[in-house]
Length: 108
Image (cartoon, rainbow, N blue to C red; front, side, top):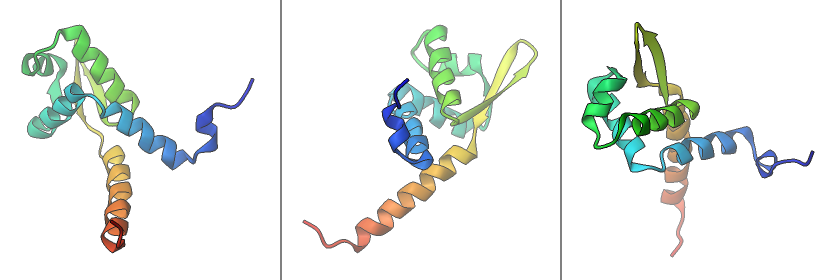
């Protein structure tokens, strides 16, 4: 079987791309903002916060969790979600490098 195109990039580049893709939907940004506001919550709370159906919110939560942006713990019949700080630290390091490099450039 042939190599996928992701094999040509570093693990860090693939990780950042996965995180960026997961953040590429406004509903997922809204979920992250809500989790930051409340620190942790139950899925039903998120459904009440967004103008989306429960299955749609669940799909967005799944994408965020697969990208490592959130963590979920089962508590009884519910799943309690919170921010996974590790993924945001990856983004922080990446964007800090970008910003410090851009500030030094003398380009158009």
